[in-house]
Image: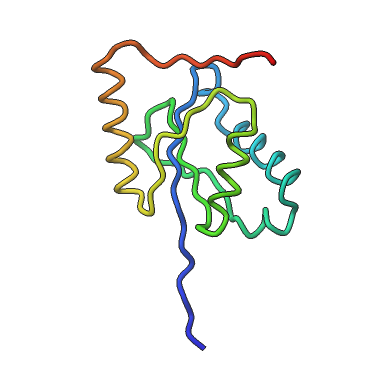
Length: 121
């Protein structure tokens, strides 16, 4: 029997100014939605957590999850009604940091900022 290493993915998420101060609330909302959609067994297998990095910008959250649960987490993220945007997904923190920096440089060059809005049905 061969042992294989568990593979993880890192998701870079850009938050609105209103959500930047409450990063733990995002994980709580995501967890509720994930549990409602896919159940507690799949939730525990997803091994989802927020990664804390010292030099991480205030409006950015990095979420770590197992590769097998990535699709379910993306579905859950899209179904919570919070003002957030997925910047990038990567297999390593180093590559994700590069992509986040490129995104932030692009936003600062255009100086328009990002706005979030929901349309009422």
